Image (cartoon, rainbow, N blue to C red; front, top):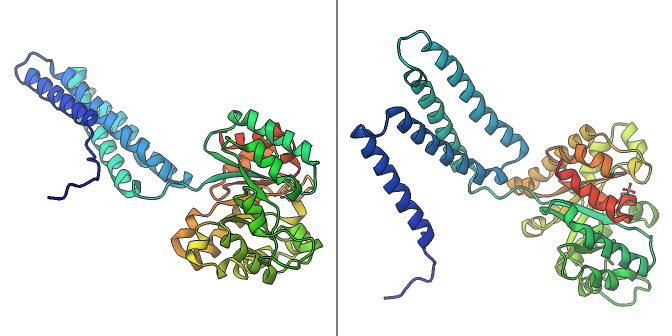
Length: 382
Ligand code: PGA
């Protein structure tokens, strides 16, 4: 007979824990039935057991839920708990029964409610993918010399522990520094990205740098469609489609930038502009490619100006972007990290990142100082 190589889900430790728990339960029940254990003590043990089980269920599913879903969980779990418990105990206040008798029924009702609610949420969310990646990416633009860049990268690595472990940091230095920065990042969990790549695979394209070249230097990401490239180097959706294809062909994850300029914002056209930038490029991707994409919303009027979009403005357009993506790619859009860019700094990161659809930042100026860059990542901890 063929033996299965799949390891059993019941490890010896888990089996022993379950056996211990069952024997404990049997012992407590026997002691109560024979009158050796007072009933209130039995109640307290039993209810505490249910509370611990419920709390464990909740802990397991929390990482699979969005902040909004968590709020619902808290409403369904905690508010009814108090509503049941407080009036419930008041109701029994005037009877002859002792305290234990008086609170028994409401306590059982409340804990049963919590237990059921925890299990409903558990079965609803346990198989859902974990929440979106949190990303803080530094776009160094045309700043620093190679040695300075390597120093900056070393500083970021040295202070990495000051920011929450679950934040994914990416640094995108100029092409000329990629090797040295890759060396400085070795052994750390900070990823390397480039700021651009050529639309062509290879050949007679003087001055261009191909996706294959940056991938060979250790890049995992590439910023595409940054507003400065659209504005100063005439990048269009047509070129960006080619660049995206090149990036995917070499295993790079594009950080695709969208955003309106001041005139467009003032004319109330920002939704249309961003929608077109997405539809003309992102909507041409295959579902597999789409699953490996980061979007950065960067209002041009906020880039390098010190003027930030308010957290509500950012949330409004991020949610809109997610809806445009969902119209094309369905549920997969819930997994796409959408970063905010434009004068993001340690002092405003927490407020921006607290918004449901803001999954991090694409940082320019503040990415040039290790403390500020990591300080932005700390925005996720607040
Ligand atoms: P900024 O730049 O943070 O300096 O405004 C952001 C960007 O252009 O990516």
